[in-house]
Amino acid sequence: MSKFESAYKTIGEVVKIVGLKSKRGDTSPTHTIRYWEKEFKQIKPKILNGNRRYYDKKNIDLIKKINFLLKDQGMTIKGVKKILNNVDTLKLDENLNESIKAHDIRNKLIKISNIIKSLKDDK
Image 1: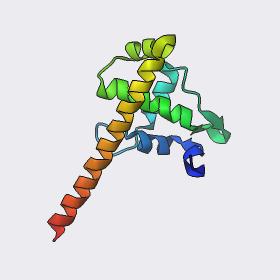
Image 2: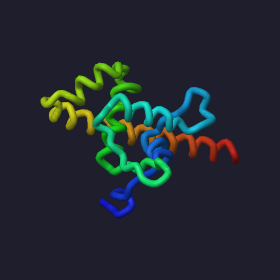
Image 3: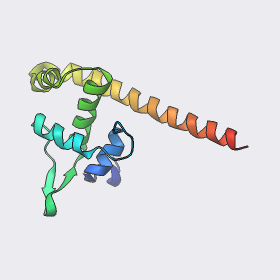
Image 4: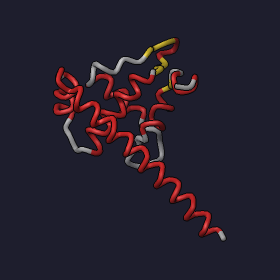
């Protein structure tokens, strides 16, 4: 793990890492992560001067997992809470982490494809 990967991230950086989008698409939905902090007690960012939140890799992975379960799998907050509170979720975590990695790769491929398409259109 590089120094950059292990560094704490701001809430705005986490929004970009996770790929959260607002419905209007004009602002960064940091409010979503703040709401999830209230709902999911497992998310524990460091809160420093001026109430600025800083997230480590463990918290970012947890937020990715919550996002995946809520947005991609269509689960409810109550359902995600049950999964996160269940002690027997280690196997699910392994599968989920693989799904999240695949989802991240797919998103990156889509972005690359869109860049290539825009470059071809510019010619």
